Amino acid sequence: MPILPLNVKILLIGGAVFVAFCIGWTVHGWKYDANLKKALQDTIELQQAYDRYAREVATKFQNQQAEQVVKYRTLKGKVKNVTDNRICFADSTALSVWNSALTGDLPKAPTGTTKETTSTNTATDAEVLENVVDNFEQAKQIRDQLNALIDWYENNELIGK
Image (cartoon, rainbow, N blue to C red):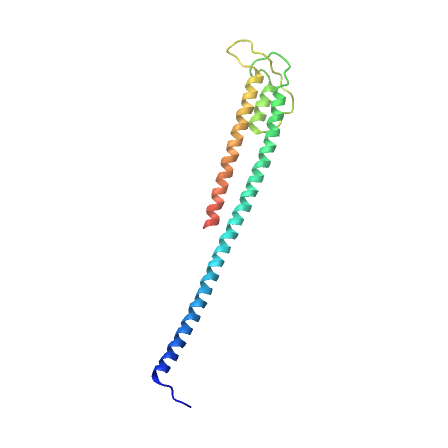
């Protein structure tokens, strides 16, 4: 077996070290890329979970809004059932419409309200009840939006921990 000169041995050892370094660098790059890919996949999955949850909340909210609009429309229709000339809450049926507006339930009987005011300083049952129904409808929408925002915030805080 021939004996190699020293400088050739050094070159061969240096080449082997260089090849080992390049292979190690490549393997390290693969590991780094795999970890980065896993982190990106986890982030994408979390974002998709947030998106699904947001869609569910939005769908529930829209369904609730649609149901409330129907109830308030029905209440407004009941208010328009005018039968006499009484002013303000002159009877229990007018009061039941008020209570129905408070609870969001439909009244069981039409109310007896007046079509016209008897003086400039009074409001008819119909005017008062329509105003109440409109106010409660708007307050309900705002409350639902606020509750949905609070729920979303609390769930995102829990998911992020």
